[in-house]
Length: 311
Image (cartoon, rainbow, N blue to C red):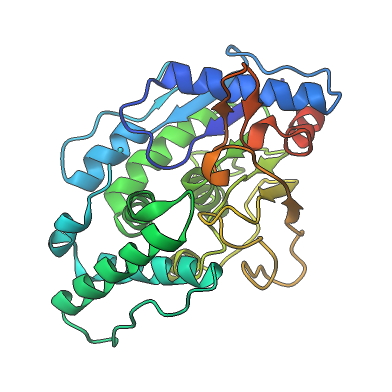
C-alpha cells in the first residue's frame, strides 16, 4: 500500500501537530474533490513529520525534543542580529536581497566580501526594513525565521541529522511513499532524498515528490546545497511536481533548469503555476471563515497528482 508522507514548512513551533495534520488533510481532501479524484487521505494512511519545536530549540541553542511522526522551532528579531555568526548574517542578507529584487527593488544594501559583523548587521537591518515595506504578505520576521531555519538545517550537521532521522522514520518500510513537502520541508525532503542517506541501500520508492511553495530556487539556498554535494534528481523519485504561486515571494523562482540546474539527462521537474488564495500566497493549508479551504493543497491542480500517485 502506498503511504502519504507530509513534511511541513517554516515557523510552526508551538503548534499542535494533530491540528496541523488535520488542516493539511482537510485542504488536500478539498483539492482532491475539486479535481474529481475519488482518493481521500486519512489519518491512518498518512504520516505528518513534525519538527517545528525540534528546529526551534536547535536554532536557539537549547535541548530539542525528538522529531515525531504524526501524533507528533523560532526566529529572532533585528535586536538579536548581532549575536548571529557572520556566515548566517550574510546568508540572510543574500536571501533578503534576492527577495527584494523579485519585487523590483534592487537598492538593498551591498556589503563587501570581507565586511565586519557590524557592517553586515547594519546592512541586514536596512534590508529587513525594506522587506517590511515592500514585500506584501511576508515581512521581515517571516523572512528571518525562514532563512535562519534553512541556514541551520544546511550548515549544522547536528540539526540536519536530528531532522533527517525524523523523516527517515516516516519513510522506513517497504511500501512506496508519496512525499508532500512544503516550503522549508521541500529543502529537508530534497536534501535527504538526493543524498540517499537511508539505512537500506535502495532507499525509498517515491512515486511522487510534491513541493509546493519551495524556496529551493533561491540562489543562496541552492548554492548552500551545492556546496555540500552536486545537485541531482532525488533518489527513488519517479515524478517531481513543484507548484508555485508567482506572488509567493518565499518561493521566489520556478524550479526551472536556470534556477535549479540538474545534470544533463535527469528527469525534468514539472513546474506548476497556480493561484494560492491563502494570505501571503504561501500557506499549504489555510481554513477560511466560511469553512472552505485555501492554500496550495486545496487547489485541484496541486492535489490531482497526489490522487493519481496514491491510486
